[in-house]
Amino acid sequence: MLGGGLIMGAEDRLLPPSVPFRFFATAILMHVAGWAMLLVGADTLPGFQGGLGPGLAALHLMTLGVLSTTVLGAAFQLLPVATRRQLGPVWACRLTWWLYTPGVVLLCLGMAMQTSWAMHAGGCLVVAGLAVFAVLVARNLLQVSDLPAVTGHVWVALAALLGLAVLGLLLVADVDAGFLSRRGPFAAAHAVLAGYGFMGSLAMGFSYVLVPMFVLSQGVPDAVGRQTARLLALALVVAAGGAVAGSGVVAALGGVIGLIGIGVHLRAILAAMETRMRKRLEPFFRLVRLAWVLLPVSVVAGLAVALGDAPELTAPLWGWLLVFGWLLTFVSGILQRIIPFLVSMHSGAHGGMPVLMSRLVAQPPLTVHAVLHGVALALGAAGLLSGSALLVRAAAVSGLAGALAFAVFATLVFIRARAHSSKSR
Amino acid sequence: MDDRTAGAAGGPPEWLAQMLDVPPLDVRPMLAVGDDPLLAILHAADEIPFGGALVVDAPFNPSPLRRILAARGFSSYGRNLGPGHWRVFFHRNGRQDWQGDAEVEVGPEGAMTWREDDGLHIDVRKLKPPQPMMAVLRLLDSDEAGPQVVVHHDRVPQYLFPELAERGWRTARMTEEPANVRLWLEREG
Image (tube, rainbow over all chains, first blue to last red; front, side, top):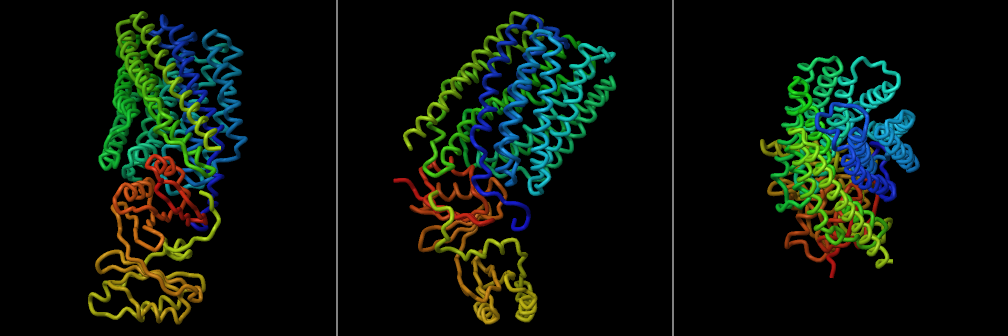
C-alpha cells in the first residue's frame, strides 16, 4: 500500500461517534414514528396504489427515515474503515444529517397532511442531504481499487440514487403541476430504484463485509461481488425502464434478472457462511435470514404487479414485502448488531478496555421486537390480501410495539455504555 | 494501546513490511533440474538499487547466498514456510541488520505464526478482510497462544478490538507505521 494513496492514521479513520450515532438514533425514532403513522393510515392501505395521505407518509418514514438513515450512518462509519480512505470532512457528514433529517420530517408531514409546500421543501432538503452523501461516498470510492465486491454495489446504489431522486422530485412537483399523464409508472420506477437500487444494492454490498465479519467466515470472492453488482445494475435499468415506459413485460424481465442476481448473492453469502468459525449464529441472524427469504419473495410479488395481476392486491403487497418485509427486517437485524459493536469499538478508541458487546446487549427487548415484527409482517400481508383494514391496523399496533421494544434496547445500550465510560474514567 | 509511536522491539525487521509485495524469484525449479541459480540471483541482485528488495524462494535456507549478498550490502530475513520452502527477503540497506530467521507456520487463512522471545507472533499483513481477524481470533482461541501474542498487521484493526475484549484480551501496546502496525496482545488476568 506504500505510495498507493493516502493512508490515514487510526484516529482519522474513526469518525467521532456522534456522527454515526445521530443517524442511528434518528432511525430508531423514525421507526416508531413510521409504525405510528401506519396505524393512522391503516384504513387506506388495503387496495393502496398511490396517493397522498398517512399511508404514503408511513412508507416514506420507513424508507427515508429508517432505512436510508441507517444506511447513511453505517456508510459514514464503515466505508472509511473498510476502504482505508478518508470519507471527507466531519462537518460534511454532519451537514448531511442537518439537511436530510428535517427534510424527511417535512416531506412526510407534507405527505400525511397533503401540504404542497412542506413536500416541496422537504423533498429538496432530502435530495440536498443525499447529494452531499453521494459526493462524499463517490470521492471515497474513486480512491479504492481493492474492494470491488463492495464498491461495485455502492456505485450501483449511487446511480440508483440519482435516478430515484429525479423521479421523486418529479412526483412531488407533479402533485400541484399535474404534468405527468400517469403517475403510477413513475412511482413504480421510483420504488424499484429506491428499494432494490439504492437501499438494496447497499445492503447487498455491505453484506459482503458485514456478514463474514459477524460470523467470522471467509469473504465472498470478488468475482461474485462484481457479478451481482452487474446483474443488479442490469435488472434495475430494465425494470425501471420498463416501468417508466409502461411495459409490464420489460419490467418483469428486469425482475427476472434481479432474481438471478439475488440467487447468486444469497448462494455466495451462504457458501461463505459454511466456512464460519462462529458456529452458533447470534440472535440477530433470525431477522437477517427472514429478510433473505423475503427479498426474492418481494421480487416475485413485483413480477405479479408488472404483469398486471390484480393490482389492487399485488401492488400494496409488493410494497409491504419490499419495505417492511425485506428491507426493514434486514436493517433492524443488522442495526441491533452494529450499534453495540460500534459502541464497543468507540469505547476503546482512545486506550483502555472496550466495553464488552455482550454486556451492552439486552436480549429480551430484541426478542420482543423480533416476535412483534414477525407478527406485524404476517398480519399486514394477510390484511392486504384479504382487504381487511382491521388486520392492517393490528399489524401496525404490533409493529409499533416492536419498534418501542427496539428503542428500549438501543436506550439500554447507550445507558450501559455511559456507565462503563464513567467507571473507566 | 498506550504506546502508538514507540519503535517495535523484537520480531522481523521494520523493512519487511515494504517487501511483502515484491514477487519472489523462485529458484526451486532450477535446483530441481540440477542448475545452479547463483548467477541468476547475483545478476538480479546487481539490479537492486540502495533501499530496494529482492525476494528469493529456495528449497533450503541459503546461508552461503545470504553471506555473499551481505558482502554486497544486503540484509536478509528468512522464513521457513514449510518443508522444502524457504522465503528469504533481501534488503539493500548496507547490511544494517544483516541476518534474521524465523521458523514459521502458515495457517488456513495464510497468516504466518512463529515464536520469539516476547511470545507468539502472527503476521496477517496482505490478507484480505476478514481473514486477518479470523486468523488472529483462531490463534487466540487455540491452546498455543500463551499469555502474549504479537500481531503484525497492515492497518489498525478497528473491528478486532471488540472481539478481543469479548475474549478477555487487551492491547497492551501498539506501534503504527504505514502498512506496518504491530500490536502486543495480552490475556487479561
